[in-house]
Length: 231
Image (cartoon, rainbow, N blue to C red):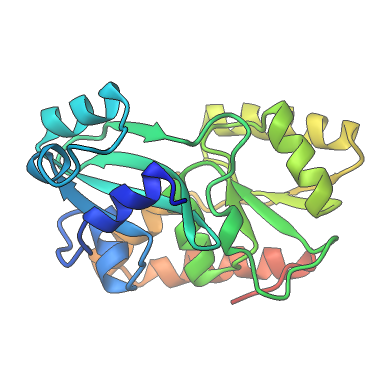
């Protein structure tokens, strides 16, 4: 039986506009896990779906929202909803034990391969496109207990590229401690002062800022040094 998230995904539409960086990445790079849906579509075509009230209310208030879907196998396990005109989010099915991107690791991924951890969903998708597919978003600034358990089943080697701000720095320090305590070696990298996070690379690309490729190549080099597989 399909999940409610999967049924909602099927009701939604592909993104063809490039009005912000979320729509840009979906349209420019044909990311099938990104969709757009309106309040009318949720309330009419999706009227029989067992959606939480807060999801329906979020879409109603925004009118139309972007959906970033976490797809594992053929099912959608969770959805991040993002306002088109406002920096506002909610999610359905992505709790503290989940990673965004878990179903999209490299086809040849095996235990012990380097995994890159980032904060946001869009950071993960930038990493997937330009650096390595073996990347997961923690959806916050540090890993949860459940996420640690998942990581222990996947690898013993992690590289952190959390946000380039005070919260990201504190999150990296806390995450390194947590990973080391469960026997996972954690590395950090030198970050570019041109961006706060990998999602900012998209804004540079939208402005045709040639320095975007410089940032990407610098991160690729550091992932490669630690044994990560590049795209």
